[in-house]
Length: 311
Image (cartoon, rainbow, N blue to C red; front, top):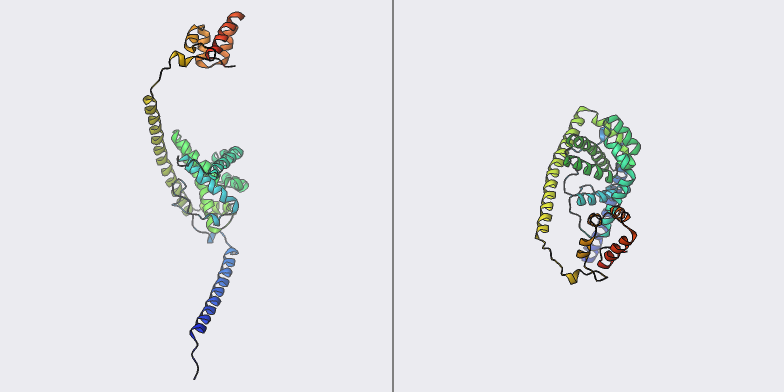
């Protein structure tokens, strides 16, 4: 009669089987990943254009940065920081956030002419060519942030038709980058296929619906932003009205030379008073040029002694 395996031996056998299964699963998963990465693709096997997504939302992007090309990871972070700054939600603090804002500013300084050229492009064919030639710049997340802020600015300035066009241009960038992320391809690889798809009536209608939804969100955000600005201005006025002016005594007003600046100011010729009040150096020079040199020395010495003028 066979002797049943002891408990320790049974456990060891099970552990060995588990290891074999895990190794087999890992091997199959690696093979599947390789097949997916090397899969041939074309317009017909691409996913549909995402219609409900818009970058106006305050929610963070759902795209995993690990799935994006390396040069887009930093750009996505910069756009999120720019959104927070535009919404007034950027906290004062971490150097990384300040660096992201600085990176966005550098990007705009370098590529603003190209971004404005893209904004002003109306023909879809010309837009496709511009994207094909300059996709390395236009498909960065900083470019999307620039167009988002341009949309908001145009709407708040009352340029509704210009805003609608910029919104279309913004959505082109957004849809291409999202399509590229879903396919795990570089955004420039899907520029031409994207434009080929929206040339079809069905996909063009879907794209226009996404643009219209984006416009609605921009309009709502512009209204909210205006209310926020009005409230801030109201609070500033209230704070200003609540401040009490404290009049200093003559002794407290005394300048370095022992003269009262109020008395010295009132003794100055009217032309010099106007120059000091407006803080206009050119006016002061013109006023002094009209006086005899001794009078100039007299008044300027008193101004120094009272603290009105500092060398």
